[in-house]
Amino acid sequence: MKNKLLIPINFIFILVFGIIIFINYCKQQAEYKITTIQPNEYRINLQQTYPINNVQLKTLMKRQFSQAYYIFIGCPTNPYSRKLSPVIKQLSRQQTVYYFNTAKYSFNPELQKLICDKNHSKKGTYLIQIHHDKRYFIK
Image (cartoon, rainbow, N blue to C red; front, side, top):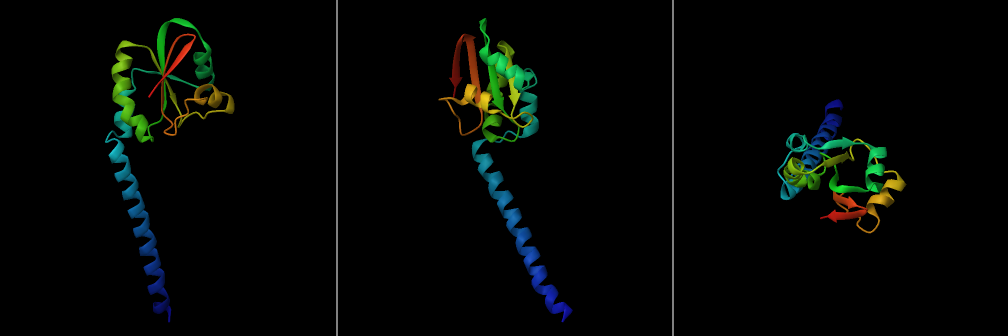
């Protein structure tokens, strides 16, 4: 009797485990269609950027400087952020680039309005050039 009960339980366990593996495989394949850059390479690509927090992001979005600077908003788990990271690496060699890590800090409603107003990105990745009082969202 006990053995008859274990067979369906084992079958269900194997089935659930197989489904989890299949879902992870499909997710990984979908990310590879976007980029092959992994989180470690992403972090290396962003080494020359200046990490900022919520308060600093708000200040930088409102400041007016005569020299242009860039704000990159993304995170290592986002494939679109990873795809853009080699561009950020090149840009940070020539320009000042600030990096806001959305995995580390979250957008409060005020920041969301400041960043996302009409240029809302469903991908959660932004590159913004700020020059004087103008903001240019680079897609």
